[in-house]
Amino acid sequence: KAKTDSRSDVCFYSRQLKQQIEHTGSLERDLRKALPNREFQLYYQPQVCSDEGDVIGLEALIRWHHPVRGMVSPGEFIPLAEKTGLILGIGDWVLEEACRQAASWRGQGLNIRMAVNISALQFNHTLVDKVRTALDVNQLPPDSLELEITESALVNDLSETRDTLVELKALGVQIALDDFGTGYSSLSYLKTFPLDRLKIDQSFVRDLTTNTESADIALAIINMAHSLNLKVIAEGVETQEQQKFLQGQTCEELQGYLFSKPLPPDEIVSVLMARNSGQ
Ligand code: C2E
Ligand code: MG
Ligand code: MG
Ligand code: MG
Image (cartoon, rainbow, N blue to C red):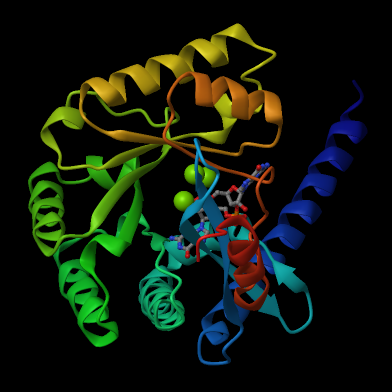
């Protein structure tokens, strides 16, 4: 290859890199203002009982309404928020808002569990006081709040992690391990940490019915969870075939577009009313 070609490649890549950095830089500037400017909103996605199809929980999922870019997905800004530490303030807001909303729905007779995603950076002793306060202020039954953590939150400092988990369990909240199966940590902690639920990652659910390896992994996760007295929820359920498979394997709960995509609060209420005939 001629030298000039590789030179122009270098120029091309450095121009791309520059644009990338400028994009990220301005996104970071905007992200700093997003909380004071009230640009965040929580959407909610149902978690249904795999037998009756009743909604028993909602997962709060953050949305950023950027004044110029429109909706920015959490996949794009949560990693940036974690890198910059902004996730701490954002995470506090998510916890408070989800609990406030849960209490408001309870006031209307909608007694469902609320699941809140907690980033690894938030997962330390100060979280315990914040959770206690959020429960008190909103008079929520502790077991109606579930914290979704990922395996990465569990591997940082094992003794502090264990203390934090034990204190959270003492408050009475539930703990789910999110994106299970994609992490890299040892399985031995599963039996010693006080967890309530495993969430099978959507990558295994996606090709459950077309790829025997994914099906085998999903089955192994369900069986292991049950033998450790943990409940299982599958995320990313999009088809009836996936639903049938998971029901047959006694996976307790399901979540995915098959039931509902995440929706803003006013729209999710009608989904709840329609699915839960008893309420
Ligand atoms: P997650 O907690 O694993 O959430 C599940 C993601 O899968 C959500 O994406 C949801 O919209 C999407 N999803 C649900 N059902 C289906 C389905 O049937 N098919 C497909 N393809 N996708 C489905 P979302 O809302 O874009 O959030 C992405 C990730 O961002 C979340 O993954 C979570 O890790 C993070 N996140 C979202 N909200 C928060 C938050 O408030 N705090 C923190 N720390 N992280 C958050
Ligand atoms: Mg989650
Ligand atoms: Mg997940
Ligand atoms: Mg995920």
